[in-house]
Length: 99
Image (cartoon, rainbow, N blue to C red; front, top):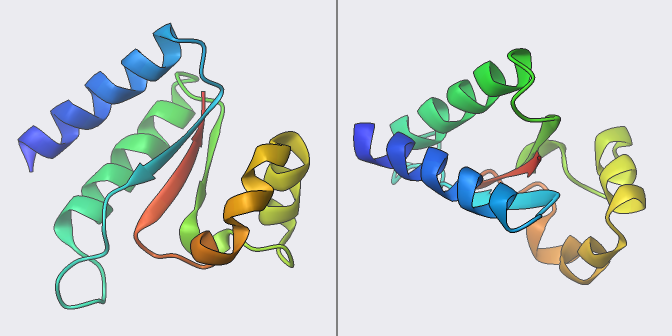
């Protein structure tokens, strides 16, 4: 778990240093399909970073679709996502992070 969170921090910083504005974090959703420890820990860490102002925001895969408010807002802000809407829609194994 600690290694996954360390890696999350390293990758977010690397993306930020390269000027990325949005990152798709692929954390999986657990082998049982109902939510794994890494997914839960990663999202908890991301919410902490959001509260501290270290990231602008996050949209979970479950919230991401053309029909959800958060999904539409993300697609409007980042039009390049349109090519991946279908496989990412309601995907429990990902989280979008706005840097």
